Image (cartoon, rainbow over all chains, first blue to last red; front, side, top):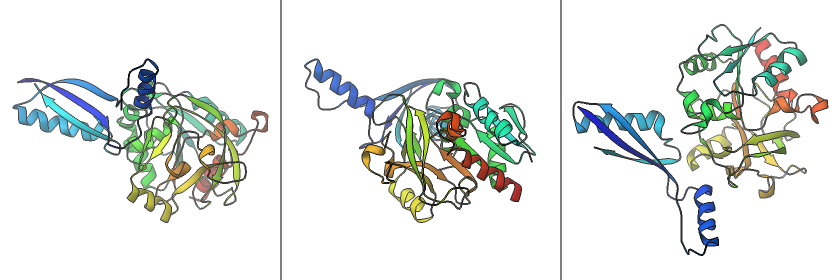
Amino acid sequence: MKYRAEITTQLKEGMLDPEGDTIQRALMHLGYDVSGVHTAKKLLVELEADSTYDAAEMMDEMCQKLLANPVIHNYSIKIQ
Amino acid sequence: MKFAIIRFGGSNCDMDVHHILKDVLNVPTDLVWYKDSIKGYDGVVIPGGFSYGDYLRAGSIAASTPIMKSVKELADDKKPVIGICNGFQILVESGLLPGALRTNIHPKFCCKWVNLRVENTDTAFTSKFREGEVVRIPIAHKEGNFFVDNNTLSDLNSRHKVAFRYVDSGGKTVPDANPNGSIENIAGITNDAGNVLGMMPHPERASESILGSDDGRKVFESMVEYALQG
């Protein structure tokens, strides 16, 4: 079966996000009163797997090995 | 004795390191494409640059190439392995060194001279320095903000694995001397055995007095001495 996985990697809670902070300041310069901006990266991966469960397992391994850096990132996996 | 400088697509400090090792220190040194072999070499340099355009995360793509397995084998064999700037990013991404290099606290590329304090002279790359010596070596990076969790940090400190810290000219680790937000002003770390070093500053850009400083030359001189003894 063909699956499409949506991977989101994001800095862990409390981890400094200078890009997000800079965007927040820019929004505030434009007059928007936002209390936080957090950056995240989204990857769409197409893969073959026997089941949704298997696809999720494979994606988890790929996140651990390459797609996320477990030292600083949390990640989420959505299989479609 | 022979050293290898590994080139990935996007490495760009390879020729500078080659010049210092080959022309300044007269050590036989080869530039080795990442698809070729580094077997039989007595030391390895992973130079700076923007390997694979810093796609995904700086260093992550190069870290997944097969040659990094050979680098691990050489490191296990106690050969000296140094990663400079993007090379440091590749070493943490491949797990040879702990931690991560995040985007600088001021999220832009930062290229300037910094002062470093030598924290440990008992490594393959710092034996020619005096402990506590303050040296001038430039940095040039956007992702050099070193981070480790608290447990790893205490391990780095208690086992003397911090090689360099960013300091002011008086040798103090003040916040103003920290160019990128690195935890505890850490600029370079080693593995347990002290034969693998990762550092954000560029010693090859400070290895001849005509460049404004030759403090960085001691990194390579130490490496040569260590390899000769090995």
